[in-house]
Image: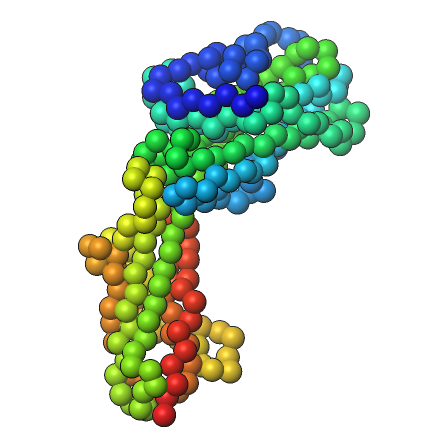
Length: 257
């Protein structure tokens, strides 16, 4: 059964005990963790209500072989005083697949629910990964800072080019809005002060070209103008930030007469 907690203060020992694992003990040869993977190397992106389940894994080696591994995500300065959120695995024990006689990859899953696991918007961005492994001979190793992973607030971007249709050479007004998930009130709000590209592609082309770059307003809205020359699609495109993923609006087709 998965144990959930969002802790204001905890220790590495507490985290390990929550996983049912004792603290690491001295051993002549400790396992060596060679790889930590969270969500296939992709950012974990959460909206306002829907949970997401991702796979995490740790690859380790030891002369006696690997018995198990563990991995969790935590956010904060450290696990003694600055821990403000933790994502624990669903399983009590990892599923390990042998790479060879000394090396195994041990996998687990994490389910992240924005309503219960993400207490505030400030936890968006880089999380630390605690990972470790236990060898068949009982020796183990664990690191609070084995790797990092990003947990981001889902983003949306809209566009509308008007008037439609339009005469060649006339001015189009292109509006839109960039918004992102708010984990505190579980709604979407405009993302203010962000650089967004206005892009265009001709009707029979597959490539968008950047026309200009503008910034979102205090409410996340976008508004600019451009000259209509040929039939094609207009869109806004946002490159993303450490807390919010990149997103592009679906192109809005304009028929130029």
